[in-house]
Image (tube, rainbow, N blue to C red; front, top):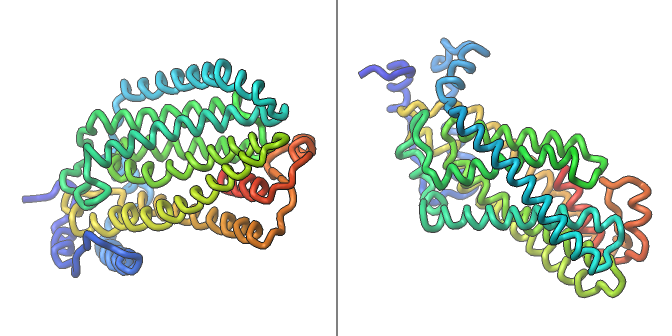
Length: 361
């Protein structure tokens, strides 16, 4: 029987693919598997009829499915998130930071971090629920491809996760413009939110939502500890704030551990292997299009994680040798830096602040 858009030659070549995927991969399996899959997938004779950009556009539109009414849902969620944040900051955070007698500049920044910490905690907890009680994609990620097809129905509970995440980043664009504390990386953060929302939107529309669920799971947990560390850092900037400084250092250690475990181990083993190696053996005949497009994006994300890890390790080293003496937030204006650095001598505070800056950029 003829395939809708794969040639008989491509199907025959797929049957001759050597090797197989493993359900317990390691780093070596990932590298060898990716090389094998790419060497097979991009053989010249397999692509002689492929024309850029026409063929890519056809491939993309063939897999793209996002009803207009669902786009409206995302817009509504973004509005609700904006209202909830406004109420949270005005009626909970503002009285609290006044009662805690934070410095004026920290009163502006602390509610933002508290809101993000709360949001990421809720969404990551829901993601844990999905992967623990609803779907077994984390422990058996190869199952992702068993029922994959272009335009397939997305389960309602995963839809909720995607719509909320996409709505949050749509809100974040507005928040960066009108609600967040203005920093020097204003335009970088604005671009970050636009790109993140676009990636979430496109992965849902092309039905890579199961891979996306794993990506959110292994990334959002570090954001929880990142924002919590920032909140504790602001509390520790007060007089007699040593206890909060110790708490911030503990969160910073957990943040670093989570970065290694989730972004540098689970992400390559669970996400990159499942997206790059497994579909070559398990989903090619189903028309797993946009293979190269999404794998480039996923590997780029790994590169960014490694880039940020370098800064984390640099500041950990500086903390260990005691070379840090005061707080310096490179994203703040100079006047705010002067106000922030008064009475600051904690090496942990400086390390946390600088790592936060580099990670966000």
